[in-house]
Image (cartoon, rainbow, N blue to C red; front, side, top):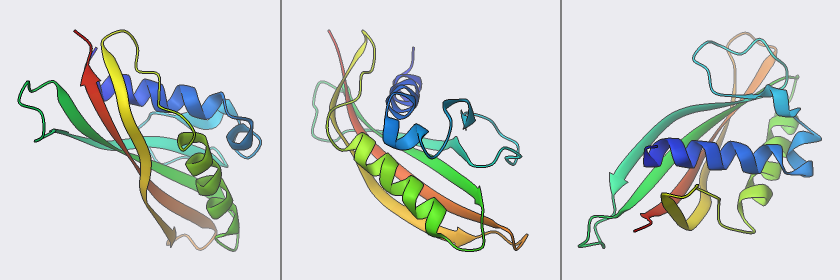
Length: 137
């Protein structure tokens, strides 16, 4: 399994295991898919970027940036803000489980943006999770 896949699985596992998140977004609405969401509310595990950590001469560490898209039909941004906060609290307390091949050295929500969708009825939040993952030898 690639480091990017291990991180994605770790993020989704953490979110669906956290009451604060699934009280706002059912576990079945936390998805990895390409099409625009028709499920309300939803968290879509989206784009990612992995870069080799420059501090490791062994070339066994990566910074993985994972983008989550939060969608909710609402007139304000309050709902997506609440979901983003729940995700932040889910990620904050402990390192992610990344399976047998990788260890999570650090993980944090590094940015959150709140935008209104052009359809006029949907709020959207774009959240980035930054994970430092090390290969287990």
